[in-house]
Structures are given as C-alpha cells and as structure tokens.
Length: 456
Image (cartoon, rainbow, N blue to C red; front, side, top):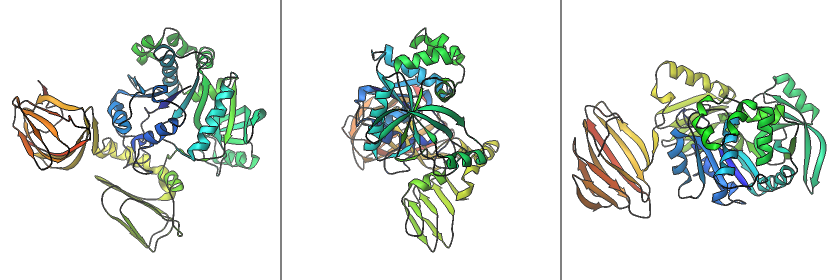
C-alpha cells in the first residue's frame, strides 16, 4: 500500500496565519506540529516512510522538508507549477509505478495535507477497510455525516450496500453534488442519506489509470507516456479536479461513511469548532486572557491577546498583523486578503517565517537600513558559500555549535559567540552537530533584498 499526501495547495482563509506563500498545511494551529506533520504521522500508523509520497510545488519544497524534520525516507514529488488535483494524483500514480516499482494492484490512499481527523486509530481502521474495497475495483471515498447545511462541501448520496464488516459499511455512490445552495444542502441534511466528501480516497493504481483513460483523455495522452514525459510537459496539462474524475464521471464509485471527528479547518469558524472550549464557549490558543466573554476565539502567536466583555468574535494575532472579526463573518477573510493585495501589502502574500534549504528564518524587526532575523539551521545543513555586495552580516549564537568560515578562515562557535562578515566578504556556515542551531542575524546596509547573494 502507498499514500499520496497532496500538499501543494495555497489558501488565505486563515489569514493572517496563512498566506499565499505560507498555506495552512504548514500551520501549527492544533499544537506544536503542523497539519502536514500530523497527516504524515497518521499514515505512519500503518505505512513505512518509503510508502509515503508528498506532492507539492517547487516553492514549498523546503517548507515540506523542514516541517517533516527529522523524518526521512519519503518521496517528494515537485510539481513544476500549480495545477488542480487531477494532474497531482496522476503524477502520484505514475511515480509509484515507475519510481517505487509498485504493482498495478497496489492500493493508493490519496489524502489532504491540511485536515483535522480524530481519533487516529479509528481513521486508520476506515482506511484499511477502504483498501479491501479498492482491491475489488472501486474508487473509494470516505464520507462524513453532515452536522449542518454547509455550502462549501460536496455531498455524496449513498446507494445500496456493497460490503459490511463489523461497524463498517460501504455503499455505492449514487449521486454527487458539488457545493449546493443552502436550501439544497438543508434538504440533503433532512433526507439523511447524503455525506460530506472528506477528500480522502482509496484506489488501486490500475483502477486510477483506467479512470484517467476513460474519464480524462486529455490527461491520459500524457500519462501513457510516463512520469518523466508528464513532468516535462506539465504546463500543457489541463486543470482538472480529481473529484471530477472520481466523483462526477466514474462508474466505480463507492462511499464509506466515517464516524469520526473531521474538519477541513477551512476558516476560523472551522478552527473554532475543533478546538476545546471552556464552560462559556471560549476557545484559546497561545498567550491569551479572556474575561467576561462568550463564544470567542482568541489566538496568539507571540504577544498577549486579552478579550473583555465581547462575544462571538475571533481575535487572531500574528507577528506582523492582527485580525478582529465576528465568527460568522469568517467567509469574508478572503475578501480582506484580496483588498490587501490590491493595496500592494506584503502581508497579503508573505509570512514573516521563510523556509530555506538549510532551515528557516523568522523576521524579528526591520528598518530602512537593517533587518533582524532568528535563524534555525538543521543538522548537516549549510548556508553558503556566498557573499553580499551591499550589506554586512553579524551573527550571535543562541544554541548549538556551528562551523563558520569567513574569508576562508574556519572556526567553531557556540552559545554566546558572535561572528561578522563585511560587504563582499565570502562566508560559509555549517551545522555539523546533531541538534538544530539557532542564531540571531543582523543585516545592515543600503540594500537588504534577498537578491544580493553572490555564490562563491
């Protein structure tokens, strides 16, 4: 069995936590692990690292590697550009067959990277049951019983029963309706035989190729030429959702209703519903203080967030922006982000934390002639060798031991030590230790852009 985690999407509905360049699969909204890492670890309950593929775009490569640190052994599929989920799943199927030497009869699980599911043990049991159905030739989707008439989800109508084992039952997929109106969604809820589409699938690699050939010939003309050909011609692929192939066109659809806690965490209202609340309905994350308030969400990334005498609001603090919104207006966050983009605001697109091949850097402060970052360099990774023409660098070590090479003079530095590299001075930094190293970096100069990097 193999699994494909789809981690290439971008989204702004959780702004200011998520940004165009820092989507929600990389957020740690449910603890000290990102949604991507939680997804990966769920799969490790029944798969090895080598059985897991992660599809993402080139710009998120180091986001993925850093968030999954220290895990290794998985396969990373880098899409040359963002397409819809149909080409992504097709790439995963071809990669499994050609690069992992999988059998056509192997079962592939296709899972989102940014959903909340609990309990893990029950979720894994559903997937294993779905694998049996997939080996019978079905494309299996996993449904969630609707709890309210949400118009942002697809709805699946259950047909006749196909297979039952204990508490688990699979049904034929009789009908699929994508994002119905509120009235229609309300009717589906009352009718009782419709499920939300959770975005999780199971199918054999053979069935996946057959469905692409039959239901998406515009993709098949590339798939039949293999993985490398498809990758080279990725810009020519049409944008087709896998849901369209699997849900709207297939004649092999099956549904397994899952009785678990699930959310796509697609808004602050969605986040509120999966967080624990106190006896007055208040949910909080981070450094917060709530007094005389009801049904609120207080989210702090770094600074204290205090709420007094309010109700039904969400207050979300990020290092460079604060959002205050009524919880029932969560759907308007996207409009706000579009407004920020039209104003040319950096906050609409970029996060203060940037992931690099060597680790990550967090912007702490900046002015016209300086920038201050906190850097994290992972073991056996390195910065440089390079130099900067228009700015100097000063570093103060906070943790770990690093090898510094400035003007070709090497020395080891540790906690409390500092180093300096002037303009047009080659330098090289490597973490040769076994733990991540942290340091403060101060850039000073007349030009501080990331383009001022001259490789040596």
